[in-house]
Structure formats: structure tokens, C-alpha cells
Amino acid sequence: MVALRKFKIEWGMVAAIFTLAWPTMLQELMQTAVQYIDTAMVGALGTDATAAVGSTTTVNWLVSTSISALGIGFLSFVARSIGAGKRNDAARASAQSVFVVLVVGIFFTIITNSLSSFVPRLMQVDENIQDLAARYFLILYSPMLFRTAIIIFSTVLRAAGDTRTPMIVGVFVNIINVLLNFILIYPSRMIRIFSFDINLFGADLGIEGAALASAVAFAFGGIMITVKLFKHPLVSPKGYSIKPDVKILKPCLKVALPNMAQRFATSFGYVAFATMINSLGEISTAAHTIANTVESAFYIPGYGMQAAAATMAGNALGAKDRNKLQSLTRMIILIEVALMIITGGLLFIFAPWMMSLFTSDNSVILLGVIVLRMVAVSEPFYGVSIVVEGMLQGVGKTMAPFVINILGMWGIRIVGTYICTQLLSKGLVSAWGCMIAHNLLIFSLFLIYWLKIKKKIVK
Image (cartoon, rainbow, N blue to C red):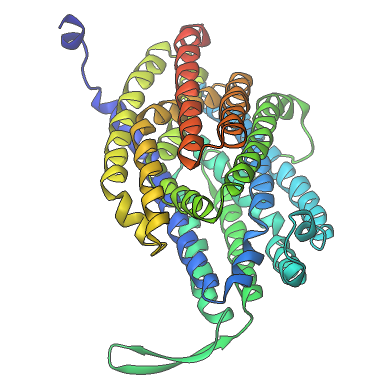
């Protein structure tokens, strides 16, 4: 009772958290919605088109996460610099991010375009659609410079407390993508709006049209986010040199490299996990794929809070404000748990309806509902690990998340799933049980580690 009387909601901190978090949440929601729309629009072209597009998903994740990891290095440096009142250092780091975008963007453009014909074979795509998949991959990855700019410059802006600009850019990118999909994928056709018949032009390019729509949208977004960065009052790189600056790049890379290694190892873990699921048969594979898609939408509040946690923890460290860091820890974990209880409850209740949106097969729906309701119960725990990892990123502690995530993924999820599905011949439910055990382990380790070091971070 004494502890309850002492605890009070710090409304100022709550307002600051949501001010930073809600634009990221909306951006994630938009991206999820567009992913659903893209899947449906390409799916209308047939199974071959869907398979050709899906063949690049893993590679896309690997490339995007590698670039995002570099962004985390700048996030930590910029957030700490602004917290310490060193705006000049923050602007210098922003200028260095321009250098990194140019180098990394050009590098990945060359690599992805050079490997465009090889990737479908590497991913063991059916020979009949390898050429189609290669053309899709080539078009989609041509604007890698612009995609790199969107990822890294968005992170720099979020570190400066500006989460609205990346959200606005993301909204424009998604709108352009969807509108161009309608024009470029399908042939010319008559559509009815209310009582009017309208002849809509169509380029009839199929999945190449889908790739071109995405490429144009990325190019627009890259230009837009660059203009916004150069006009920003806190972190504009205008007037600063973009030549390599070791004093800036070294601490950024020190934070980024463990995060990059973690994401690579985790992504290969997902590949291994999916491979074992695929061995369980079509019903299990379909239920797993759809359940994963459904589940991703319910993590949006968690990742919005992670962005806020990273920025605010970095600011607190830069200002050497221990009380602010303590207050952030209390309030953001409380908010995160509350949000994830709500989303977990909604997922538990609406699991049958959500599964039925993507399939009419009762066997797939029933199996999907079981695993979704299992994971719904664990969502509050996973939510805590998400925000704690964000705070660790903000203060530049990325080695511990690397160790914790690798231990959870490979020590629990992969080994456990292999034993259950390959040795004991258990089904999808056992595999998702291992996934939940993985989530519970990293929740425990992240929370214990943060509570142990948070008083030592600010000296």
C-alpha cells in the first residue's frame, strides 16, 4: 500500500512520450495497411506473381535492417548531443549521415543490381518465374540511394525529437505507391464511381508495374526527407563538411555494428524458423504465414514506443539527468504494458475474424486462431523488451541486446522448434510455444539488465 501511495502518474512525461510515439505508430500503421493492399493487388495477378514478389522478401529484410542498424548509431549520438545542449555536434553528425547515405546507398545499388538475376536462384524460386522475379528485384532495388536516405535521415530526425516529418514522408510514399499501383499494374479499364463510368488508363505492366510504383515512391520519399533534413532547425547539415570525420563516425559505428550483427543473425534465425514450419505441411505453413501477418499489426504501439524510448533515453543521458531517466523507465514501461494488454486482448477476441480475412479454409483458420491466442497472452511481456531495447539503443548500449536476442532466437526458438517439430514430430502449436518462450526469456533478460545498469548510465 505504501508503494502504491508513493507511485503517481507523471503526466508531463506521458505527454512527452506520446508526442514522440504517435507519429511513428501512425507511420507503422500506414505501412502495414499498404503491405496488405500491395499483397492483395499483386495477388490478383495470380500465384506466379505472388511467388515472384515473395521471393525477394528475405533479401529486402536483410538490406533494410543493415541500413537501419547504421541509423541506430546516429540516433544514439544525435540524441545524446541534443540532450547535452551540443547542437553543433548534432549537426556535424547529421552531415556525416549524408556521407554514409551516399556511400551505403551507392554500395547497395551496385550490389543489388549486380545480383538481381542471381537472387531468385539463391532463394530457390521456381525456374518458370525466375526471370520475372529477377526483373522485379532489379526495378525495386534501383533507387537504393533514395531508400537509404529515407531510413537514415528519418532516424536522425527522430533523434532530434521530430517524429512528425518521417511520418509525413512515409504517408506520401505510401499514397504514391498505391496510386501508381492502380495505374501501372493493370490494363486500361472502366470503373464506376457512384453513378459515373470513368475510363481509367492502365499500363498493364503486371508485377514490374508494382516494382516501378514502389521505386518511384521511394525516389520521391528520398528527395522529400533530404529537403526536410537540410531545412531542420536543429540538425540541418547545411554548412558542415560531409568528409569522413572519425570523431563522429567512430562512436556511431561502435553502437551500430553490434546492432547490425544482431539483425543479421536474427534474420537468419527467422529463415531457419520458417524453413522448419514449412516442413509441417501446407495447412501449418498457411496458418503460420497468415498469423504472422495478422500479429504484426498488433505490435505497432510497441514499436512506436520504442522510437520514443530511444530518443528520450539518449536525451536524458546527454543531459546527465538521472531523474529523467528513472521517470522515463517507470512511465514508458507502464504505458507499454497497458497498450499491449489492450492490443493483446483485441487480438485474442478478434483472432477468428482476422484469420478469416485472409483465408476461407477452416483448418487454417482454426490452427491460426490457436497460435494467435497463445501469443496474445505474451504480448505485454514482449512489449517491455521492445521499449527496454529502445532505451538501450538510445544510450548506446547495443552489445547487450545483441547477446540477449541471439540467445533467445538461437538458444530457445530455433533449438526448441527443431526438437519439437523435427525430432518429436510436434506441430505448429509447439513451434509457436517455442517462440513465446523466446519472448519471455528476452523480456526477463532485458528487464534485469536495464534495472541493473540504469543507475550507472548517468554518473
